[in-house]
Image (cartoon, rainbow, N blue to C red):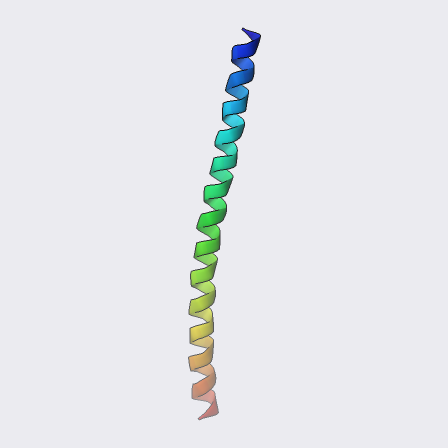
Length: 51
């Protein structure tokens, strides 16, 4: 009984790590898109102001 409980705990830990990894991947790609969009809009705004 004790060993089966320990195995379950290990599996849950791996699952949690996987979840965190996916979450980080999602956030980094989301932020990257937002930053690129922000830089583009900033530069177009800057060019408009300059002209």
